Image (cartoon, rainbow, N blue to C red; front, side):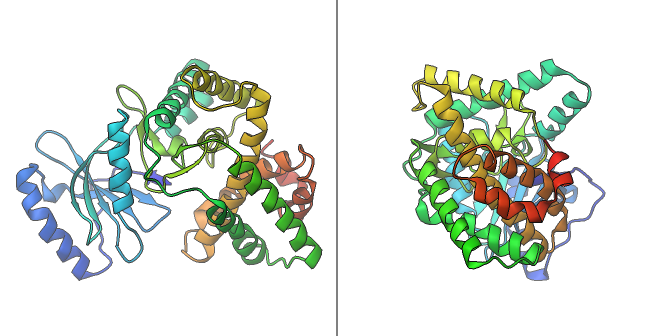
Length: 355
């Protein structure tokens, strides 16, 4: 999840001299081959992970440097998925040079026009035409991603991974953020809920899943959206990225808009032969359950960022995700126990604020 900025006056600070020196040694020959100007290096964005991005000017265009300390991050999945995206004919940063051992990548620069910012501006201005154009393009690009990105070499979004993600919620949100200890009966309810959500996810057809397909990870580019932050891509449920785009951490839609966007996706997916159900209702329910799994994971991740990683800003969006989760939990038979588990954490007024 990126936080773009572009402040040339802001100095680039290194965690230690050895990493700064390793970067300087790597950059020196690239400066000649790519026409880079080392004196223009400046922060481009921060990240919820240990990665950061720097912008550097070149002879004809700027480039992006990914700085990913190998003790915490592995750049090889990013390089691999970037190749898959390029082969699919979609827009993503091109890897121009790499030092996987030190965690440095030189990437093409997709610019600074974030989808999120332009959507937010359009919503604030009641510019429905721009909202519609951007969301149509995002959903169309997702259909192309699912149709063309080869998922065969991606890790499986399997039972174990789905459950590890769900486990983040009781560990970091329930216990660490709110200091709540569940009873044996509540733990049993949680286990049954996890079984329901995992079973629903694994019953879906599989495609390449971006895993964080949302406006903050899309750029407004010529020829279609530019795709960022794709290094965690997996082979998994077809509804996952649709749910991610519709029920985002940073912008919410009313249900009428959600349905409109998802119906358009579903119609286009059917047209190109993607394995979606022939009845939209049979697609919507698994999508909502898939979104619920994601929302519970995100609640855990945002609390972990606060308590483990010293990044409290994300916790400001906990009410939005509680509202998403509560809405689905109260809608479907079998999910009622989840509403009872989360209601003491959220408070009725906080729920209503995001509906």
